[in-house]
Image (cartoon, rainbow, N blue to C red; front, top):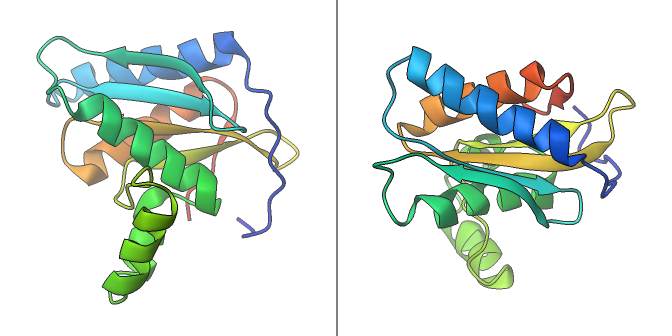
Length: 150
């Protein structure tokens, strides 16, 4: 995935709902911990969100932060965090610059349309970061759009 995708705001509500449902279904099939899923459009606006019974109260903010990080940098939040792992000052600066909105750990994935344009992002929080990202990708693909993972 190129680092220079254009952002489009349009991510249909039904697509976002399909993503959320598929993420939750995949998490239940894998017997993961209770999930929270947030889908943002290309402008960073929430389109759909769901918090499973038993999910921690901070999970919504973490999921939204993962999605926001993915949208903001145009790559998965985990890839962004991993690339900058040795640069804690930079990660801190990104956090400061975004008012603490960006959560640079795995679980946030850009959503691309078939023209390779970013139309939104999904953030998932509830289990390990790797499991969160894996079910985010499943949800995105189930909706017929493309997961922007590196």
